[in-house]
Image (tube, rainbow, N blue to C red; front, side):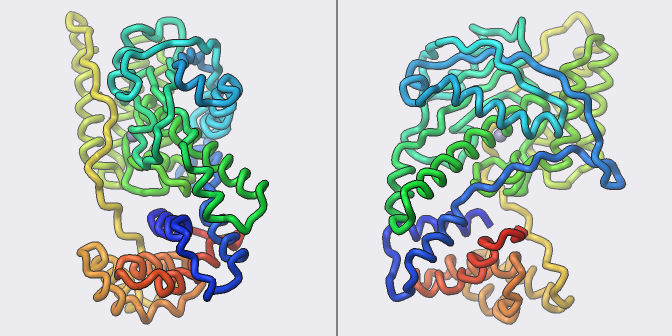
Amino acid sequence: MARTWWVVLMLLLCGCFDSQWGETKRAQARGAAAANPSQINRVALADEEGKAITVPTHSYRVRAYVSQRYRGQTVDWNHTLRSTIDDGNQVLVPGVGVRLQVVSADPWEPSNEDDLESVLTQLEKEHPADDCDWVVAMVSALPITTSSFHKQGLARVLGKHIVLRGVGVLGERDQIDRAFDQLDESSRARLAKQRMAHRAETVLLHEIGHTLGAIHETSAESLMFHSYDHRMSGYTGRSLSIMTAGVRDRNATSPEEHEEARREMLSRIAADPDGGWVAADRTMLQTLLESRGHVASAPAQRTPATPPPATDPQPSTPAIPPPPKELTPAEQELFTRAWTLGREGKPEEAWTVAKPLFKYETSFAVQDLRCQLASATGVSFNVARKECEPLMKLTMSPDAKK
Ligand SMILES: [Zn+2]
């Protein structure tokens, strides 16, 4: 779904807006609404009956190390850093009972700031988390926008170190100014600011998720999807359940408590065998946890191997969305068939199959499919845009559901 909006946004950004569609300003307002980032859900883990599970909150000490280039690029960097952590806390406290507290923010120069993996390794070596719970390094922003999380941040699964890049993407504000030139200055500034804050918060939460044991998921709306999207809206219950056990592991003060937390993480993965994990990550985490158990039972070899940083999986194909319930069984079949054909690179065939469904103007799933297929068939911008109109309307309405 996200990709759809990216396509629409990029079409708007390229300046090829055609006045024959008129009402430029209204269309830009719609585009701006679509480009607005999602609010990240501040939810607690729910029990089987859907009731929120309250987790006790503890404060955790974070030491921050900030490169010179980051400091140079980020206006009021100290405030920016702390407000990103505060935003993250709004999600972490209700979700897993973690409140991050920055106890220091000092200058630090990594030898190769362009390579996050080398920054992470150097950080672990030079600043072991002896007297704190997390060590976070802030390094310079990328010169271009990237959707890959791990070009924007890096951490090891169950590690204590995180590297984050600044989010002041050069040129993004210019693009927004060009795409939405009919909107007033304050609306454009607000959009740019919200997009930056959302990116900073999601990258932090994604990497914190890894350090608490969360692995990549296949749903693009999950914070644990491998690539960034401005519509990301929160951790899934699946991730929160692993992370809750990860927090227990951090709080553990005896080998028995560590062992209990480890077993809990293993059972969480086993309980949800194919429910949306990226398979390779799931195997990696299982192997890691099992090796820790082996280490725990053999005190002579107490040096657990350093897990590799969480890396982007090969672009995994997200699952085909379930057909909307308002469709008849025959129509539901068409919906799934159209998605499948689209995935197989046959958008024209998929379009023919899906066409009878387009009358469902208020179904987000149907209109999203319509817009994606229209964009994929290579028709002209104007034709694709017309097919995407119902989706744009749905996204604009305050109660729009994805
Ligand atoms: Zn990741």
